[in-house]
Length: 246
Image (cartoon, rainbow, N blue to C red):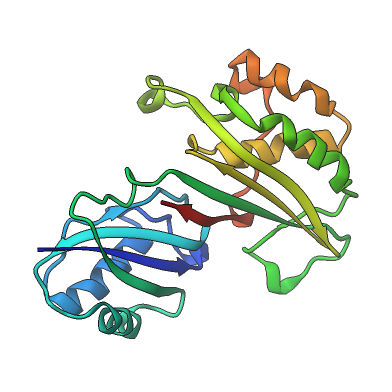
């Protein structure tokens, strides 16, 4: 029995997230369909994370056990043959038997792209948030530094009945806001993320940009442990799972 780690990237625009659903097309479904054509069965697949509808991944990892003897490099090519153009496997390698794509992960990095221009870019439809008001990336970067550290991020989590229990503490290791001409990119690296955490952080930073929240008030928002204290949840189309750290 082999334990394989598959690394891929995908365009999430046409999918309802990663995780399999009964009535919607997901990335997991098309991956499983391709895997079945190659190894004739569908193993128990462990994904590194859930991603919401419309969210993209520059790096996404899954692991599974299989008795199939296909070499890793041939599995990469075979999967890409059967996957749609919106999904591509970049690497397959054997890992330790106890490796788990989710539980062995020690960190992830998400980025959020904002097209900051009065004129929309048709080629970024579904791939970046179009925000036509002026953004001061230096101000936003200063505000983002307050996210760094180990905090209870209840204020930055969409909480429904299935998520009311548990540890809401996460350690943000790095945060930045940078501009490349009209593209503003927000990056957050942490040991883990809560549901909608990055999108709520982005929504809060946009309130900072609008002068509705002072950057120095971010710690107060964190300490309130109250979702209503933070900003709105930014749309999904600008969000990318950028890096998975093992």
